[in-house]
Image 1 (spheres, helix red, strand yellow):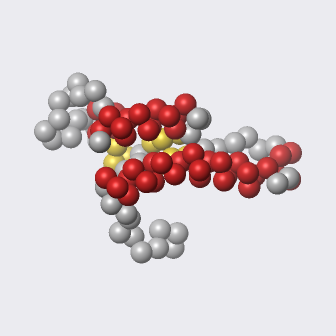
Image 2 (image 1 turned 180 degrees about the vertical axis):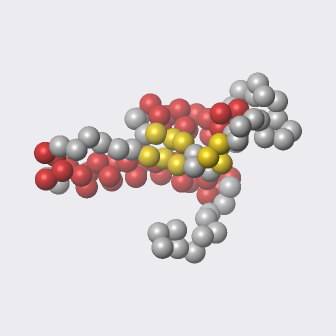
Length: 96
């Protein structure tokens, strides 16, 4: 699953979606070599897809809805991968 995850992250980043974590380990996780080919991903504590745009006149149009929908559609494979390989969130209300 690791190579597929790395490919997914590369595709998101190529689509100008930032993929990051709320925090990262300072070193390799226990049991993994420091030169592991996916060490950047292994050090992540969580996984966040994010996209932002410059403020402009487009905000006073239907375009914001289209941009957000496009972002959510682009990020959906990440949500699916995480649900499949990590499991759905155990937080009852992520927005509360």
